[in-house]
Image (spheres, rainbow, N blue to C red):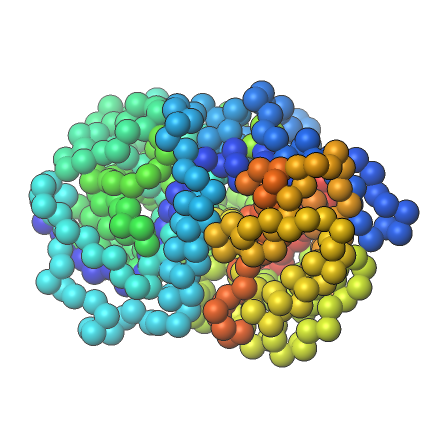
Amino acid sequence: MATDWVLHRSTSINFLSFVVVLSSLLLGCICSSSPDDAHHTIRVSSLLPEPSCKTSLAPQQADDKRSSLRVVHKHGPCSQLVQDKADAPTHDEILLRDQSRVKSIQSRFTKITSTSTSTSTSKTDRVGDSKADLPVQSGSTIGAGNYIVTVGLGTPKKDLSLIFDTGSDLTWTQCEPCIKYCYKQKEPTFNPSVSASYTNITCTSSVCSDLISATGSTPGCSASTCVYGIQYGDSSYSVGFFGKEKLTLTSTDAFDNFLFGCGQNNRGLFGGAAGLLGLGRDKVSVVQQTGTKYGKYFSYCLPSSSSSTGHLTFGKGRGVPSSVKFTPLATIPQGNNFYGINIEGISVAGTKLSISSSIFSNAPGIIDSGTVITRLPPTAYSALSSAFKKLMSKYPTAPALSILDTCYDLSKYSTVAIPKVSFIFSGGTNVNLDPSGILYAAKASQVCLAFAGNGDDTDVLIYGNVQQQSFEVVYDVAGMKLGFGPNGCA
């Protein structure tokens, strides 16, 4: 079964195999606010992970025309995918993978991989070939690896745990008979041959050509069936048949003829998840394929602790809470599948930093559910770090943690006061970060400011998932707006 496809750019999977350390070790508990209202007072004990799961549900009533899915950390106590914690990566490995993702995204913005010099038609993948060689392209991007939802696929419905990612478009899952290779996943591998609603997409179908924009790869053909291929920046990949199937999101909401990838050759550190749910802007994404019902409107809340749950919700329902503040979504020609944003300033302890507006306007900006640590122009990061250090001067410093260079030893304190940090988005939208969006903790003796600087002021600014934690992040794609509402989940 031969396919002849070229990888130009792939939206992809960033594998954060142990997300307990991503957020349970974050300072996620506000005990009180200091009198000057410029600081958060936090218990240092909140740095430690909790062993049990606490469920937080999205507010929803019976006649609320929305569909909510439970969001959990892939390796937290709320996840059904947890197997052996001994396999968890170190903090350095987590942040190294995050940096790999960022480099891939930046490469996508600086290199258009559509010329003959950046692709090679001699590179092929055969779904059943034991020596498949899939090249890593410089323009590939890596998708989210730390938050999962469970959806139903097929008739009868089979539940599958999928990583969800706003930086990816194509939804795919591993499928029997796994002609080449399937990695180990928690649930049984999906078998299209026993589903009454599965059909293949033919090579001559116009939707087969849609894979080019969704994956950055030219689709292949095998016995008249369209073959997709997507490769990620860490050499993980999925190759298989492009098909239609019934997608079930909730007990009342199902979608026939949903386009997805049925993977026959898959490798990567997917942590037991069955595949990926694409929430990007391309026409094959879940957002676009369900647009008639939900109006291209979705929201999510990423929990501040790995022992808590969040939600992914489709549809507006009864309306938007007044607490949600909106900023315009930006269109970015170099990365039109990403959700673009414009940041205009940063405040620390209630004081806006003296950063020239050109520092933000000269760099494209995106919001990304898969990048962990927000990446700022180095000039902006330097100003943020300096202001934070001055206000944290009474606490002893600690060694840098990978890309995080502003760190403290808080092991001898029961509570600490940290300066509040807020972002100013276009339209005057001011978003005050939750404490869990300010600090990243490896341990009580190594707690770091959860931001990093890019290599250059013109590199793409990425608003990462640590800074999004606990917010209801609302994507009104049809209305071209992005909203932030505080206290969206625990």
